[in-house]
Amino acid sequence: MIKRVFLDKLPFFRGFTSEEKESISQLNGARFLKFQKGDPIVNEDDEGDSFFIILKGTLAVYKRGIGDAVATLKAGNLFGEIAFLSPRKRTTSVVCNDDVFLIEFHRSMLKDLPFDVRDKIKDKLIMILIKHLDDLRIVMEKNAGGPTKISHENPFEKARERQAAGMNRVIYEGKDGMVITHLGGLKAKIVKGDNVKEVEMVKLSEKLPSNMMRALETKGLDPSEYYAGEGYLIPKAASRAWHQAMTAGAVQLREQQQQIDHFQNIDNLYS
Image 1 (cartoon, rainbow, N blue to C red):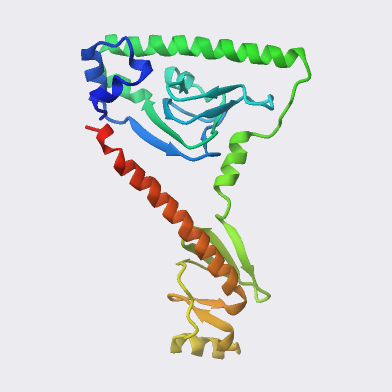
Image 2 (tube, rainbow, N blue to C red; image 1 turned 60 degrees about the horizontal axis):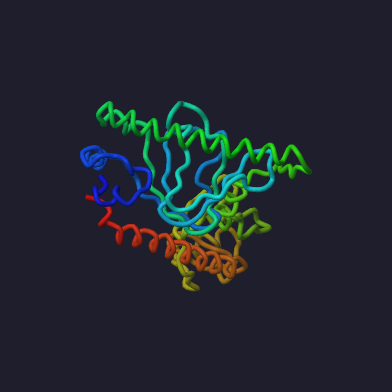
């Protein structure tokens, strides 16, 4: 649930009575979301049933076929109203220009509101939708009147690729067929032939357990060419890339924890 006093600060809820705001504050399911610069929020043609109110930061809105952003959204602005009002796919892609803080409302939440409050929300969303469509029409007319910058790249997909950088990245391929893939964080996948193992990445040790040494010697391999993890072996040739991936993964996990801490610091927004 959301504290009533918080709704008083959102421009969208101006004009709602105290009782109406109180009923909205009792809703379960509203989510506060934090994103970083370059993160995608929604993608054109994706399924969706929610709208978002921007609390902090700016976002760029893209339309397929138009290279430049068709709009910039800032704190207090709202987007996603079309998918909220009707079972339709997203009509634009929205990507963060900087760090962004949002609140998300799902269509299913309406059923828990009195009919007059539902209608009031829908009426306000329709007015916003009309303005957004009018703004988009003006942008498209401008593009049609001059040299149009056509982009076949989806900025949402590019942002998603940036998000996934460092994940599912091959960090070692050996002549013996071993492939080590960094899965993000401190997770890795080791594949050799039909054997596939997902492991926790740890600092490697030169001291091999006796059972691992015997297994290597049985296969005619030199134990001095391997390091040991927790229940797995890594060739020394892969150790540098392994530890680089571990460092990057630790940074990634630390940033995620910072986001969790940020959410804990805004507990006062909830009742």
